[in-house]
Amino acid sequence: MDTRGDTAGTAGVSPAASMIERAVERTTEAGRKADSPGNVWLVGAGGFAGRYRRQRLAMAGTAMIALLAVASAGLPLLLAQSPITQDIELVLDPPSSLHLFGTDELGRDVFTRVVYGGRISLQVGLVSVALALVVGTALGLVAGYWGGGWIDNLIMRAIDALLAFPSLVLAIAITAVLGPSLQNAMVAIGIVNIPSFARLVRGQVLTLRPKEFVEAARALGADDLRVMVGHVLPNTLGPIIVLASLRLAFSVLSEASLSFLGLGAQPPTPTWGSMLNAGRNYLEGAPWVSFFPGMAIFLTVFGFSVIGDGVRDALDPRSALVPRLKAGRTGTTE
Image (cartoon, rainbow, N blue to C red; front, side, top):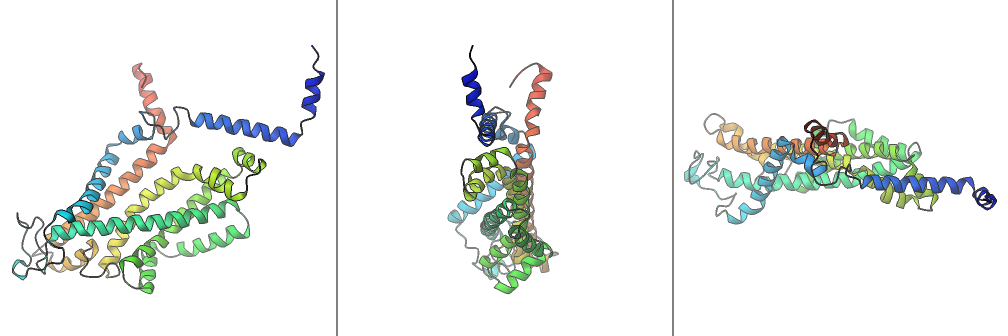
């Protein structure tokens, strides 16, 4: 058999072209493996949803946050009482069938105010985390992609400057400069959360930058923006989602702290932090004024925290081995 034609064809291929072909083949193979049953995003016992459902604490946190979201969105439309309506004849009235959580020092229904305060806390948490996610991810992506250059140094020195201050102190300072309001509290908490996302994404990008699928995309003519957004960014989504769920708890707690200090939403808008501040003078005679908003803060922060832990564990590829090991011990397959 004459192999001279094949030899000549092989010799005519440049080393650069061969490298590109091998890189593309490996990238394609990696894509096929990503579609295999071991993919963490697949449903079923071995996928993300299956592993998340097995975590009872995370499911309990999900139920608490879902209940809070439904109550905050729906109950204000059904409640006949206004959170700012005062009744001097029912000042500091204890919990009863008429007022489930009692009334405050101005005769306002505590239950109604807690429900309305939950809407504000969720709004601040989601908006501030979304702001930090977008800005922090963009900064981390750019800094990591050009890691070691002047762009990376400029961005990370600015991030280090933000990290030099305690988070809550920085949020208080920003809100004090901008002025006390709900919108400024969102901005302040979002700025405080930016360094966490920027540092996380930068570390992920520095790890992914020398990978073969990135080199293959560059060799095939993709520009820097397409490589960053289309190839690098999708591979950082797992850690970003975990961090976002964890930072939600911090954002809710920060909003309560700012409101407690009078730097959040201004009266008569009900917030959990301002309700705690108003009720601290009545802890002995009317503890329900502070107890119920304090419990709402605790349950919300706890719910978001366990959800973050659950998402982190469910996205861990090593947890995919659990159902397989169990199946191996019992002699069955899932």
